[in-house]
Length: 205
Image (cartoon, rainbow, N blue to C red; front, side, top):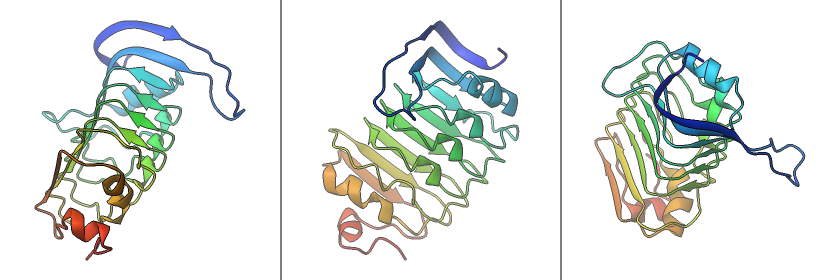
């Protein structure tokens, strides 16, 4: 495999019986994965992992990349145990390859992706443990795709900053109704609604 690893612990396969015949058997990658090129994404995705027991980095914020065009190959992924970071991908237009992702065990960060048009690829996401940060994504106009993220957690922080065209926050309603956030910080977008405005239906401009 040529995909870049910050560190590797081991690779293990766990197969479980599922009631839903459409569910893939669980296949776990143990360690932290850093995907910096399209080849990295495609090669890692070809292994069919359903869970990463560690962090997943798609791009890296200190080094913007034009290499990654899509992350469609990651469609088998259901769970990231720790942090999921999608950052500084100049040519990534969508994150549809994460359409089956259900849970992020710590933080979800979507940062400085200049061509990213939406986050609808997160339509299956129902849980993030600690932080959600979506900042510096020039083309995103809406947070549609986050509607199913409504599970309860404690100590959740949400940061939504400096997205040049973001004016539609309605998808956050379920998150806000079900969680007492440690912090909600919305700033530097064309529209910056408060929690009260989102919950009262004034979620877009």
